[in-house]
Length: 192
Image (tube, one colour):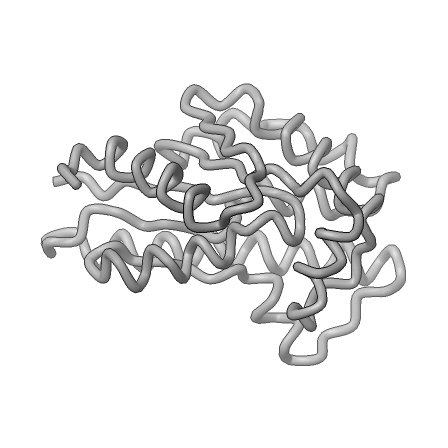
């Protein structure tokens, strides 16, 4: 049985990390990978200057690749058949400084096809709601406008993926998560 890799992507505060936690609780047989950037930020690594931001994103991408590879290799003959990733390697490109961003959009095809499917969560359309969602996340420093720009970059990067599933923002996280869960289970050919 081949292990499928599914990316959950979207701008900061779109609900992807909460969805990963939701899936961990409801489907413990699916391996989940937390957002690597948040893990690294928790160490106190600085990334304010352009050179530091480039280095930071390089570390995030390399660590993401290594963790995914280790999980696939170490779970090859086990019953788990899926990895649900809070961001994929391609996501890191959207977070590079603007001057570096266009140079990184090369050779995406190989990265793109590492993943069987992409679930993309859209942002809320209201700044007030965004600010409320952001309030609980100590690792997010983007304001609403910066997140809207990141969403555009992320969609630009993922739009060519052969199985992109866009989940529109909804005021009810429960309904949004049920829709995304259904997409994941369809990808895995699992009855609900």
